[in-house]
Structures are given as structure tokens and as C-alpha cells.
Image 1 (tube, helix red, strand yellow):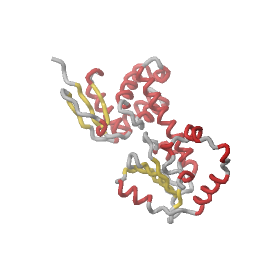
Image 2 (cartoon, one colour):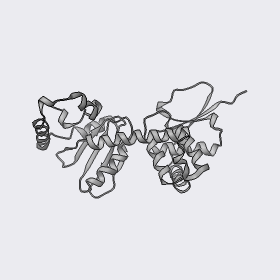
Image 3 (cartoon, rainbow, N blue to C red):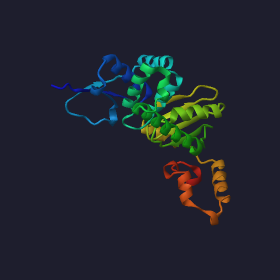
Image 4 (cartoon, one colour):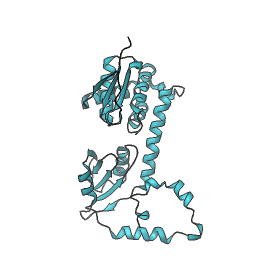
Length: 255
């Protein structure tokens, strides 16, 4: 009689995913019986044994150290960014990638003939492409308290990447970036390290509604429209360069 598949369910964060990978690895299960999935994205199956993983920072750090030490920094960056993806198969892809990595070492990142390596690369590239777009399209608003506030609705969990970028660019500013899709936010205090925190929808909306329209926003809208040449308007090209889903909170499209 065939044995049941074992499915590990974890929270959708890098720490949660790395914890699940640690537990699954310790169980020494064959790959054909093992699956690791995000809890809220999973559809329950018959004839499967479920293991609910409690996020453990110590286990997550051990996985990160092992990957950095035995496979290399490039491999760690690939799996970390892949873990930020919204795709359902991301954890299984990362797990299979690590199986290869601990066998072949740093060379695994160049093994493009392997499905797991190609998949992790695709996931990482998709996350970085979206993060790059939001670096361009994210718009900060000034609040009464002098805090810069922005909000986005990304497919992937790009906040850690954006936080590194904007904290480096604006080290002297207090700012908050709200992710409405994943109900979390990045908080950066002047000259300090940023931190990421989950938020209730009510808290998230409360932070946003503390913002008031500033004079600079009006100036930016006026500038955007004054430099436009009506005779050369090309809305198809505009949509290709700035997709509709990025425009929800862009000041220049909010008139």
C-alpha cells in the first residue's frame, strides 16, 4: 500500500518558509512524498498527512547560515527573493534547489538545465522586476506629523527590497510604506534600521488617513499635465511603460 504524501504548511514569510524547510529536511522524507506549501494558499487533499509548522527564528537562521556557508551568498539571495513570490509552488522549488545545492555547492546557481534552478531563478526575477517597478512608481505623501507615507498593492512581497532601497536613499527621513495586498508595512525612523510589521486592515487604513494633501502634490500634478503634449498622446505606449495596476496610488493619475 502506498504511503500518504506529507504536506508541511507554513506562514508566508521567509522565516516561516525556512522553518518549514528545516523541519522537512530533518524528517528525511523522499522528495516524491514531500510537499511544502503556504498555509492559506493550500487546498486540502485526501490521503495526505499534514504538518503545521510554527515559525521558529532559530531554525530559520540555521537554514540561512547553512546556505550562505555551503552554497554561497548568491544562492541565498536567490532563495530569499524566491520566497517573496506569490506563486504557489515557490517553496517546493526552493526545497528542490537546496537539495541540489548541498550536493553540488556554489555551482548549482549555474545549473540551468535543472528545473528547480530555472524555477527559482524565474521566481527571483519576477520579484525583482516588480520591486524595480515600484521603485519607479511608488509615491510618498507628506503627513501632518512630517512622516512620509506611501502605499502599494503588489503581487509579491516586495517590501523588504523597497525598504533597503528607500532607507539607503532617504536615511534622514521618517517614512512608512504600506502594503495593502499583504497587510503589512515597513517603518523607517530617521538614521535607524527599518523594520517590517504585520498590520490589521483597520490600522493600515488609519495610518493612511492621517495623511493630508500637501502643496507639493498639487505642484506635481500640475507639472505632470503641463509638460504633456496632447497631440503626441499615446495611451497604449503609456500602459506598456506603466501598467494600470501600478497607478492606484500614483499622484499624477489621481486627479
